Amino acid sequence: MEKIFSLAEHFISINGEGQHAGELALFLRFTGCNLRCSWCDTMWANEKNAPHTEVTIPQLIGIARDAYDRGIRNVTLTGGEPLLQEGIGELISGLITTGFRVEAETNGAVPLEKFMVKDRPVFTMDYKLPSSGMEGHMIKENIPLLESDDTLKLVCGSEEDLLRAYEVITEEKPACRVYLSPVFGSIEPARIVEFMKEKGLGGVRLQLQLHKFIWDPQERGV
Image (tube, rainbow, N blue to C red):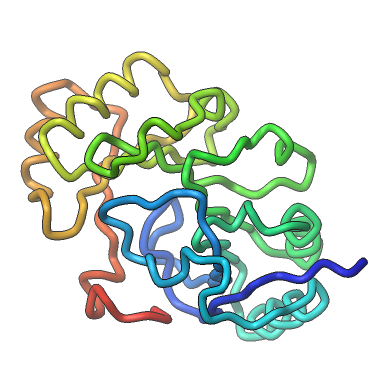
């Protein structure tokens, strides 16, 4: 049976975060999420029945090929939680075969082991900290699976979050890139820099969501 995907929107913009921040990418946003973070900025897409278009893999590959013809070489799968889409592995493989670098933005509450195959995406994986209200759903076993091209993102909204982020980094010792990112409007980026200095986090990067500085933070399709 042909797989049907719930596509909330698709657009070309810059990657706002991750190791390829600032590069153009085709965004495929899918509906449905298994978490409800307090600071979520795409809550409108979290319900499975949120406004969407039902599409197949050939249709999605067609959208991607159009973007490829326009010079785009990155595809970012986002949501919601894109890894909840049935058949997402098949889509990833098809996009990679088409010639894309595929990045999956995932929330840390979906097991990654089954995606660790030859045609796998680059992962930007969250570890949800206390202010999100969702830390109890984190799958720590995902962290050792992340490699140098992947990113572990810790979104901080409070001093408690900063301290917990430090614990996670020092206890788990990720092999991937590690980024600290502020909850927009909740904590000053300068405070995160000071915390990094206090704790000697020389291998960690501060990440700001570029799209929220370029466009209205509530604007969609950017």
